[in-house]
Image 1 (cartoon, helix red, strand yellow):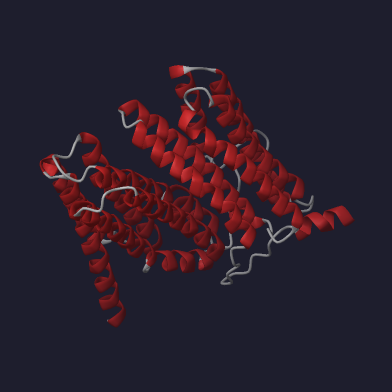
Image 2 (spheres, helix red, strand yellow):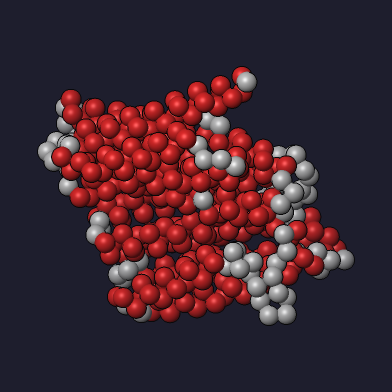
Length: 393
């Protein structure tokens, strides 16, 4: 009985319309992923080929998945308690191993990457199952379902770690697909069937704040890398303008996401009767392109800072236009999921970026970066003005 009470105390009590703050332990855990995001952007920068892009995308999907699953579990468990904190600290160790192996994940450190990833996913879910008291049947069944799916993917990850070349890519790709379809399949397993909507209820404000924190991590990593790169360069007028364009672009991205969208998402999720279903779509899936766009933009910023003049090569065009493009696609879909309509400003910004792609190679990297930054600024101002006018009606 005492053990059951102790396990029951680990769970948050979800109260409608109340916001549980993100704890310091969670913020401490998130710091590991600053390093992970840096590793992903640098790996893409040095392997900017079709195959390299596929490999880095797969690694990014893995990093995001292990983080967002942890965000779900800490939404249900209480990180203020020592056992949950120890779980997060062990996850930090796994995250550091995972991050350090990213540049060589498809070379000599693939098995280390696979072992770190599988251990984090399976170990965290097993802890969640152990921490769930017997009387919380729906939650226990949910944990069993998720653990079963993750054990299957863990085998694929580890087999891929032992394999080499294309075989590793195919095995890891299968593992990622398996894990990403699992929430949509509602973690169906024999006998237990599908998970129910009730079993996925979340504390909306907390989930929204956790994902917003990852956006800050990605933006902050880009600014830090830009600052470090700029500090090593000769401060010419072109380099200074490139640095200002990169910083302004990051600020515009922050404004587009945080000015109204983040708050609206948190409020809707807190009031929703199907918070789990909405969180699965808006935060588990639709935040991926937002963060991917920021990471791709960070790659562009470093390329432009180092080589601002001349014609833009394929890498520069793809990253400079593709970063904001993917970011806006993710943002418009995220805001559609919480507002129910497509933001016109974002749609026009997407079309403008696509149009810019037709002659992007004719511009210098500097002016291509300035052009994409101006598009983001227009989108941010347009949205702010349109939402203000609607509020005044």
